[in-house]
Image (cartoon, rainbow, N blue to C red; front, side, top):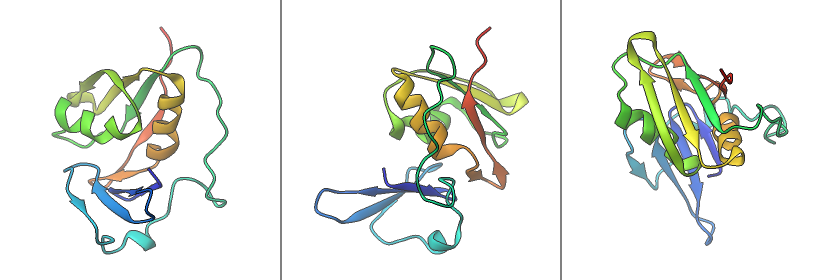
Length: 132
């Protein structure tokens, strides 16, 4: 994955071509979505992801500010491109959920790409979950 802007993720192929995937619907297109260039990236001013800062010794990610009506399937689809998902849990009535990845590096990739993403007008809050 190259980047995420708004509700679209950009993926690059080895031959240099890019395609785009809508993170909520899974729609794929070769054409750059309208407005893609005008939405701020969450990678910061330099375009380089934030450095890896472990959230403990686990790979469980908290996702807050989920839109109303999100279900387990669409939640999993939203985060599946960052690695192997071990489990997901959505608490839709409270607008949050959890994603557990196979590795901490996959969890960090999801946090770097998805924190601050706008989904249906809400800005996702994505971070390592607090260990209870």
